[in-house]
Image (tube, rainbow over all chains, first blue to last red; front, side, top):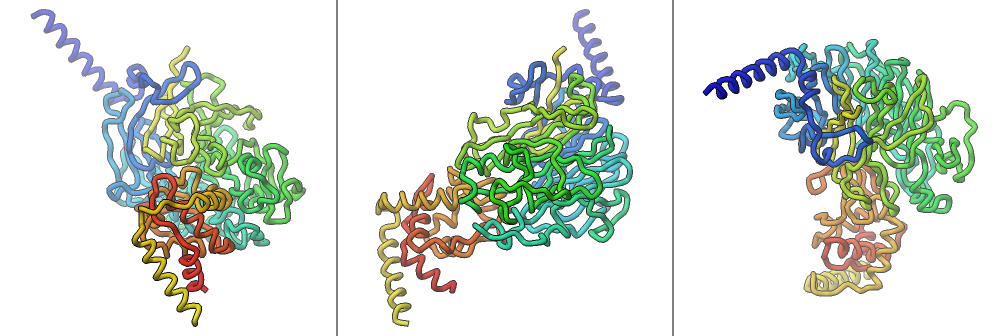
Length: 432
Length: 140
């Protein structure tokens, strides 16, 4: 009898403390209680790190954003039951979301939180929703339309977004072309000179984050010569925009006399750029060769596979990665949970390649890029791997999960979204 | 005019032959080998080694309804004309353009289409040179 009273008292105390913890800040309680999955959610991680699945099968989870209280917003590229944004909450503090809602009638990729606003993009527009202090939305049914009328011609349609916290939003408008050929992806077809696509796409546009119904005329082409940027982030420490470009495809298919299949698999590099207003990364006129470590004139524009571009207008990348791995998210880590070397470095989610065929595909992992004084040190490493679920990805559809979005939780955990099976991963450091 | 009529008759004959032998007739190995060679040089990058395509970028061929359809005209047209429309294919949308492959000769197109209709999980009748020729004539 006595035992049962003390047990129930204990249970009551526990539930009260849990209640208070939830009421105050659920992430603090969560920190202690959260255990990684026994198999680390299928991921291979550095020593001391663990991972769990926050949610599964949420839809085609592109980018993700997390509020200060830990509410997760997931942008879906395709509507599920007519809804394009999923909201996930972990109410019991075990790290797994048991509450799932959805709203927004548009598919897309971009989602970001800045101040008291949640921004999200379709493939043509950018919207925002006001957040309540608890992380829910004031009115999920009626967002403000911030940007409208952006070009979407199927190819490279994602309108990824980043905010600088100073009243500006940066929007990627991908080029609706592989290499600005007269005939897209046709063998031997010449490049258009100048490339007419660059007027309205193939760059980053800057808009006022507060004004409604802006379009091209209200914004500014902030950076150009960027074929397609899906991953971008504002570096708060150095107040600078960084972007990840998807390098061009099909050097061998289009110019078989200049590039063999192996060369095609390894060129050009996927590249990170430190952007300043007016930056020009050189697409479609040049590409960055990771072997020669040079900007090479594109074959559509008179290149022969070796001819180095000397045009001073084109910027060098901040760091280069192997070809075709499709960097779909970039995140500067500002948390304190991970060991100190990760702080202010960048995580990059590589969606995984298709253009290396017939050679095995690459990517399908999250990489870490150490930074010093606002610049990459020159090294990078695979941080989280195993998303594909197979040793070798022969055809792209063989990859089970594909990393697409990154976000930092309030406790410094790293969240990764997968747009193949709709899994949301949480990676934590529990080493000492 | 005479040739057109001749072609029509040929086409009808062909349909009759193929129609009656949808699945039974084994595909000539030489046709498959030649088709595979064309596949490797023209199709493989986008449609991949396993015919699975690339999710949401390049349409799969393995199991695709248009690839294994009894009506081969659409398939032949896609090879000749390319594809750049936003169209739902078996419940999915794909972003990338397909370039026309009209510079391939009728034999090469027949071979590669026969190959893709009989690779991976696909099993469908062969595409003949006459069928390709007939569609090509209509597109001109």
